[in-house]
Image 1: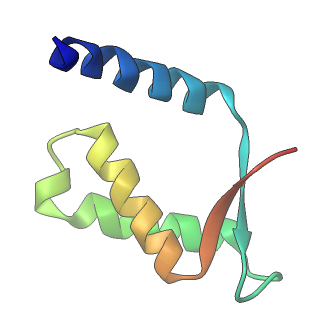
Image 2 (image 1 turned 180 degrees about the vertical axis):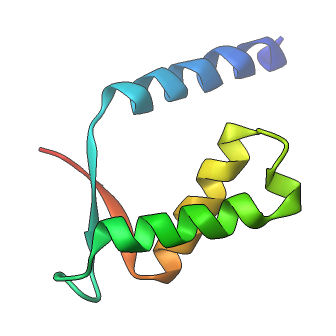
Length: 78
């Protein structure tokens, strides 16, 4: 019976995340260029053959991992 709730919880988390607003902050270098780093990560991710199939979720996760390697973190706006 508990397994039936998992999809509902997942959808709820997605909707909650979609409604919140976040900013990318570079904790290592506050003056870093977000646009340059994000474009580099996006370009690298779209070159990966595994991610070229159009799965937006996997593409976004790849970009987030790349941004984290460059020192960027997402923080929720107050």
